[in-house]
Length: 161
Image 1 (cartoon, helix red, strand yellow):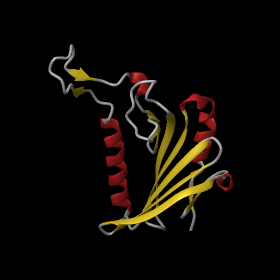
Image 2 (tube, one colour):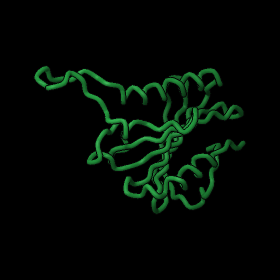
Image 3 (cartoon, one colour):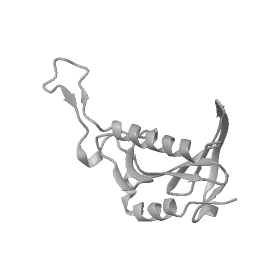
Image 4 (cartoon, one colour):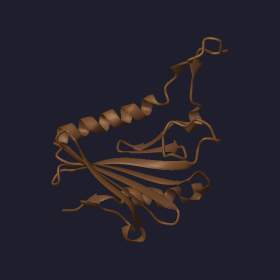
C-alpha cells in the first residue's frame, strides 16, 4: 500500500475496499491485532498542495465537532450544547490528534458512557506516490495504558516506494 509501520507483521487484514471519487482513487484497509485496530485510507493522485488542503480541511472538520452549537430544543435550560473539555481532541503535533470514539468508530463523543475507543489519527503525505494516508489507530477506552504503544506505532509510519 506504500507505507510501513512498526510491528506491521502482527496485524491481520480484516477488510479492504477500493473506489474512486472523481479522479481520486481511495483504498481503505482495516487490520487489527489482539488489542489494537488500525484503519488506513490512501487517497491517490494528489499533489502536495491538494493533500495539504485536504489535511487542513479534515482537522478543521474534526475541531468543529467540539465547538458549542445551538440547542435543537427551544425549551432547554441552556441554548447551547457543548462538549466537556476532557473529551476534546488532544493535538500531539500538526499531523497527529488523539480523540475519543464511539462503538462505531465515530469521533465527537462527549460522555463516558458513549466512549468506547481512544484513537490517534495521523495524516501523512507521500510525495513519490502522490498519496495522502489517513492512519487511525484505536484502542479500547479501558486500555488507556496502551496509549504509549499506540503513539509509537502511529509515529513509526513511513512511506516506502
